[in-house]
Length: 223
Ligand code: ATP
Image (tube, rainbow, N blue to C red; front, side, top):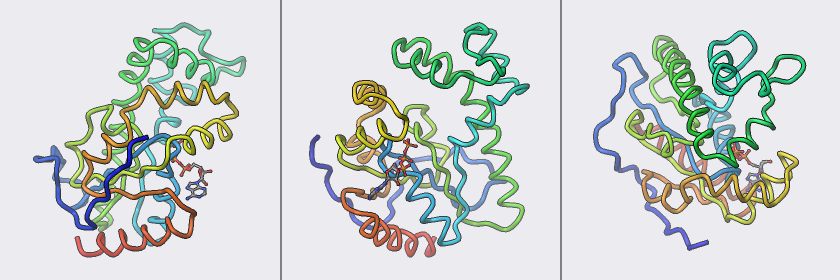
């Protein structure tokens, strides 16, 4: 993978205008990066420093729970074969379908993402109402979904590609080939890094990552 240039540790909003709701916290930070690059780990470290963190992956799982409209829409489009015997979504099957058919992936994302956005919007409004000024939102597909203008600043986590693929394969109990195909569906990490206001380089151990997050946390406290 190409070397990712180091970015200065200052925030400089690159995205231009921000389509934010006036009912959101004063600063809403989008946290993104490559698949299995360490986004959730960075999110966890920031939440340990008392920043509220919204995990949109978790929201994406909630909006397809049994009885929820997004699951009904998925069944309408793809049929009941995307359900397991217990009527919950067969995630493995859906992932395989998304990795082999870009059209299907687009359809799934078009169904799920608006519901995720709606929940994120509700939670941001609640957090603002309870006095939170800075909130982090972890959005794995932030650039792929075109959500960049919803955030005041965007942070990316990048890590060496072979490590990400290995971690992904181990965590999801899938082959290296499937993990590589999954990675290939996303915008390359170096492109995400270039479009971000701040980049966390997760290319060493957790201790080194924590040091970077501590620095980031000091910057966030100045916002
Ligand atoms: P996904 O794209 O699947 O949501 P992610 O980008 O949120 O993944 P994490 O879940 O934070 O990535 O990290 C992936 C795995 O790698 C986790 O098991 C995490 O504990 C481990 N990990 C992350 N960073 C490091 C590091 N610097 N050293 C060792 N392990 C790490």
